[in-house]
Length: 291
Picture 1 (cartoon, rainbow, N blue to C red):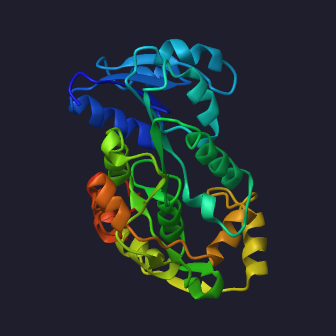
Picture 2 (picture 1 turned 180 degrees about the horizontal axis):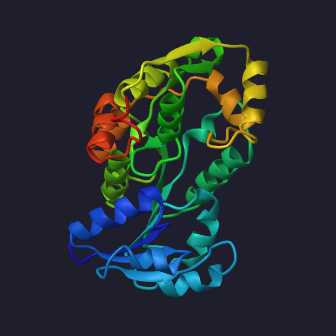
Picture 3 (picture 1 turned 180 degrees about the vertical axis):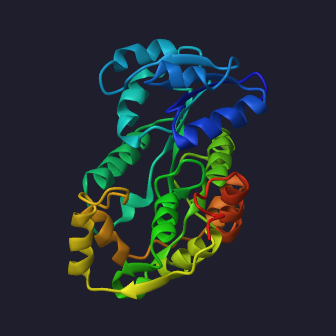
């Protein structure tokens, strides 16, 4: 990877920052693209920053990508068609970070965007779309919210006793998958990337409570009560905002076979407990030392 020119779109996001650091450490020449120039400059002098808002000034994208041998979209898959149109030529490899929201039983705009991004990739693009499960670690907005909740209360309400399955993937492992996908050896078919094993929401809550030094219990509540509680989060200061669609998705299993991911990308993900330990070591678990 040394000397390879790689453009990272969404370079200042949670995954993007870690990805840029990993690529620079491998000797790649990185063009970092995001909206905020001040945040781009915090990535260090080794990167070439481009301040571009894909929602409004995508016409500047071709110039930023003109010398790239590979483009990684760690921002949002909804920008896929704009990025494809901006590639300097068809040989440039495009790696897109999608989402397993594509597989939800409760379709929404984001799931439709994942479907469209995958369809765009299928139209002769030299690249691959990776669909991660819930990414955690760093400044994530997923497991960190659960950690924030268990820090504040010993009781966590969940429908159906929290039996539905989840398979979070640590940010470090997602970055490894993105880097492995740069090689054409990974192929072009869409690929799910997930954590080591499926876990129930109840077990995840318990593990988060243990990492935060708290004893927590899952309380089983009907779905309509959960929806009402989600509505109340809009008015309670300090409590993470929870959308109704997020509550409904608490009822569906999100469990996947990681064998293809290991074979194609050569990445074996850490367990959830190991991932929490990484977060603790990085001081990413607020209130961990509180009594």
